[in-house]
Length: 188
Ligand SMILES: Cc1cc2nc3c(=O)[nH]c(=O)nc-3n(C[C@H](O)[C@H](O)[C@H](O)COP(=O)(O)O)c2cc1C
Image 1: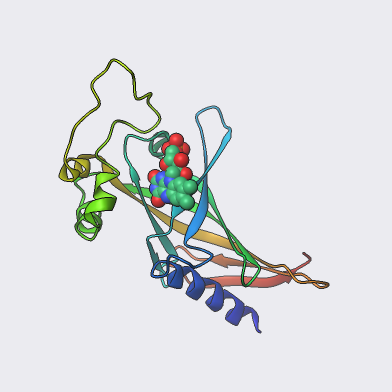
Image 2: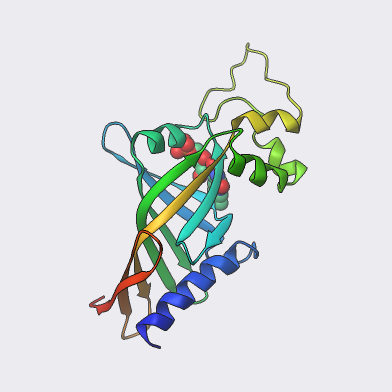
């Protein structure tokens, strides 16, 4: 496989994951940096991929700690591993936040199931449920006010294939518009 083919196959497996809940890259790790400069990693669902622009889209609650972290520091790492192909993808780049009510958030919200919408209708993520406080009662439509979209643009990809004897690794860099600018094999 040429370097260009490696890059293309990495991005096509990311794209495929948005339509296949069993795909290895369906859940990826989004790692941000908090106000104290500490890394903060968590799993997220990969919702949409635009290969040409090198964009990954993630949905979250705009009241969550990650949203605040990302609004202060947009630089993130996204890490995924597919157990069947034994490929690790480590992407670095920055995010743009699409706030509740923005065009992109409204468009994404309109495509969600009632069940998924209801996951945004509870109290603020990370807060204690509180024994004495009333549990917020909201129908699923209420979650719309908190629903945000994180749009990640990859600047680079570190591709790693775990093999029995001869692991392989390559790195790729993208222009601001998503063109593949640099690609090279590196020692694993
Ligand atoms: C498999 C899996 C998928 C998840 N997907 C999402 C997601 O798409 N968006 C999200 O905000 N949280 C998702 N979560 C929850 C996050 O990992 C995290 O616990 C939560 O969002 C709070 O993160 P924060 O406190 O850093 O904001 C997922 C958790 C798991 C285990």
